[in-house]
Image (cartoon, rainbow, N blue to C red; front, side):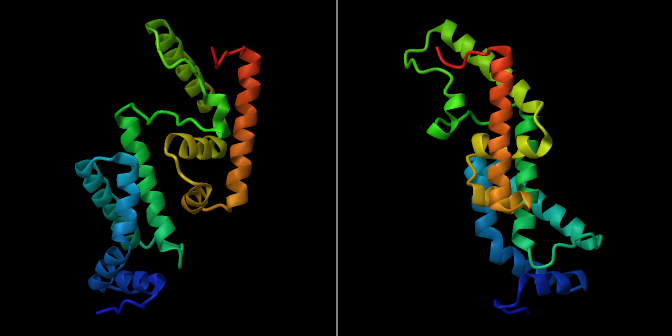
Length: 194
């Protein structure tokens, strides 16, 4: 039985080499972090259980097919798989979480009036649709960071771990994404505040 101090990379090697118990050790070691990450985005136990299971089915398939090559970075790799499955879940259900409101994204402060009239609500929905269209047109790397940051409320540290780039690169992509959005918004004269 592998002991608690065995590095992840070695446990992965042992599992690929046929030691099934090495995988249980890896799952036990990282389960609460991965499960907690999924639950924080989904907030539904049953769906979280499903995504957690699907994550490890994918992990097992990849390890069994010998196509895992990120030695020593097991957890960020598994988190990326979980993250992609979360996005798939939202896509399938056609509902991404709503924008959050912070100074950082004043560009997304769509309506300031607390008493939403039906007309305002319709305008808000339209603006959000327009924004989604614009976001879809961004380069993939910028769009990915933007979606993680705004729709999933991830920190830049989490984004850098999930996408496998440095925090500075993630910040740079976010900056470019916001600059590009502003350009398109100005060009189309989309009014984001009332």
